[in-house]
Image 1 (cartoon, rainbow, N blue to C red):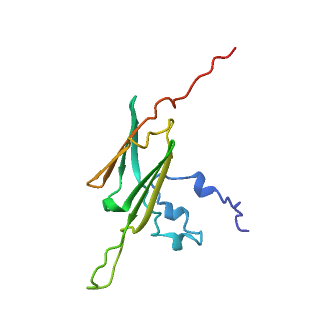
Image 2: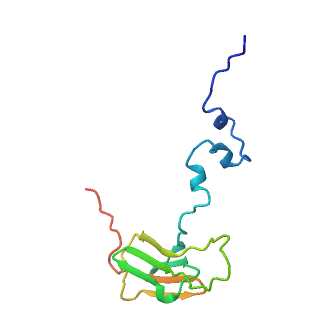
Image 3: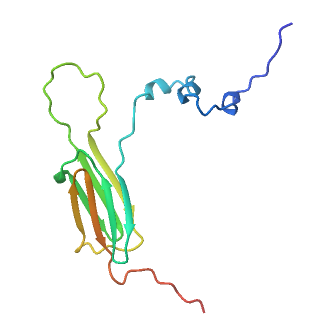
Amino acid sequence: MANIMRFDPFGDIARLDPFRNIDDLLKDFRLTPTLRGVESEPRIRMDVSETDQAYLVKAEIPGVKKDDIKVAIEGNQVSITAEVKKEEEKKTGSMIRSERYYGQQYRSFTLPQEVDDTKADAKYQDGMLELTLPKKPGTGSKQLAIK
């Protein structure tokens, strides 16, 4: 008589080897081959720092022209939109692989305090957008005394 083994569907996951390729774990799923090589759109990476007077934002937006970047400020909500346009190229052969992204990138975030949009400043150089967003006076949080 043959040995009977109990099937454990989570056996591979329980013995997860950190050096094992994730494709090996997902090889039985039907969607994996169709999704392989497809990457999500790149995000606008940024650092936000704060001083007593303003918020300072540094956002990486490489490969974009200054005219294709838009910054909108509404109260304490800041939105950055950038469009990467595809360059027209002469066809000299067939494309083997294309990893460059073309399209629109969008990033929105909320600051703890409202921004004085009349004094806000934006500079773009070498793929780096720098925003200086002064805080609106008198809009800071107020702590109530409990009676």
